[in-house]
Length: 289
Image 1 (tube, rainbow, N blue to C red):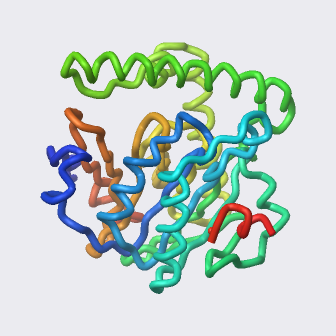
Image 2: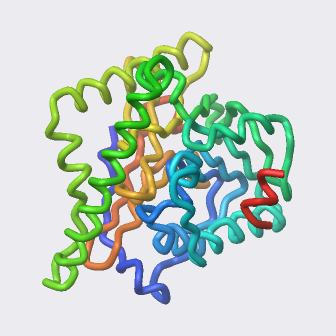
Image 3: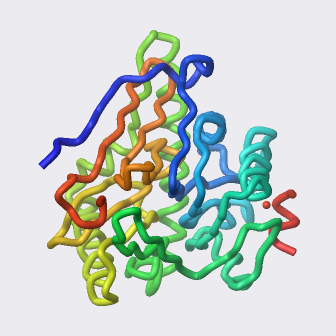
């Protein structure tokens, strides 16, 4: 079994030395456009260095929950949308699978906007013939489904922590230190959060197996991962507020977890083990019309 590959690459500011990659597929989730916590500059840099035949937007791309409370939309976030639209016009098949934060888009399932197709879920077949089920995953979160008020409260607390995280990393940057996610650290140290993540991963993997798929790719929990659970490949795209991660399939048919790190941090690529079977929007307003 091959061990996960990891390599240091130039910082996100060193755009001239990062190689451009052409891939079979890219999965992005939990971008949260419309919030101050969205790391749109790093995502834009990632998009400028990666092209793919298929791009899957796996939910929570636009944060409708926060936009209802406080409209925020900067030029970089606009450029992310325009870049995705341009990739679709250039021939990439772009599929948008809405999540709970952009659930308004579920009213448009089956429709296309500037060649971006909205689907409730999607599938993808790897070069090796493995069938992957693609879902945001909020349907398998009991809090979102049965206690939405609690989900809104948790979201508000999460935004507060992200604000602290941003200030904390500005101080680290001034001291010449690399990016470090306070919110991710707290999440992984809280026993209940760890138990929730484990239960979520097991639940969506079991559902993928029940449906006859070889693997599942999802988002929702902001915990980037790629591993095998009971013989089923589990992939989570992570997010673009904390993790700065994407899942990709390269032209060898391997699934990789790509970390697109800020300056002074380290970016790595983690591949699924070779022995696992699944490895062989014009403007926002235009999308809502």
